[in-house]
Length: 346
Image (cartoon, rainbow, N blue to C red; front, side):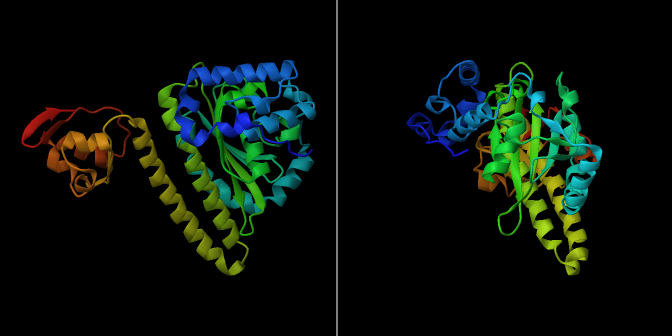
């Protein structure tokens, strides 16, 4: 099917300038749900919907033309026979061998955060997944399914496959109703020539209030995370084409693994208190990063604050020392800070 001309209404809506409102405003979410209802029950043109991105609108049109039933995608979705799936796994053996250890490194994180991390091949067949999902209909999510646009309609991973670009999608943008409470980030895995090798997708069931501000702050950053992971896998795949690089691959995979785990921990700390005063520190207490609110609290500019050690500002250092060396997650710990000669609890 040829791509249709993008409407002026879609062009006028700049998501880059409005992404905060787009993802966290319940009004926009509900408006897109109304768009979806109007489109599947009538003859409205989604390219004229102000808050619907052009690539989403065009995908809705294609999905309808494919005959996708948004209330029963099982009519068009297909699970491969065991022998067929085994053949697909064998064809993607190298991709799986490289992607699986990196995905498994985040198993604890995705399991504890109600995420599912998916790996698809270049044809959108689900190869591997890590995590769990507490959504009522999560039982149908399993490997071996063809999950492209022709099978399930508009979805985050299908558009990442078609456009070969990372994409972040909110629930009602997806064509099938059973995906409307999910928010997803997907990124393509490409070779050195830009050819598609697979897709990584991180999905999360949002529950009854998916526009919650905390959830927005968390999920708007997952696109960068999943894109970095896809890039890491793509780079390792390129190196693996030569036998001479096999030993180097093993070393680099471990290094990348360690780097991504560290980046993930930093990401969690950053996102947990994104609207509050924020600093990140290393195990010795050295301040690595800080935001404006933190600099205001410490009465220093951010650059100067990064040259300090957090222990210089704490009256009783024993609690923080135990936290840093204990290796356990702490959600809340009140401490007394010494700022400009004055002691204040935080």
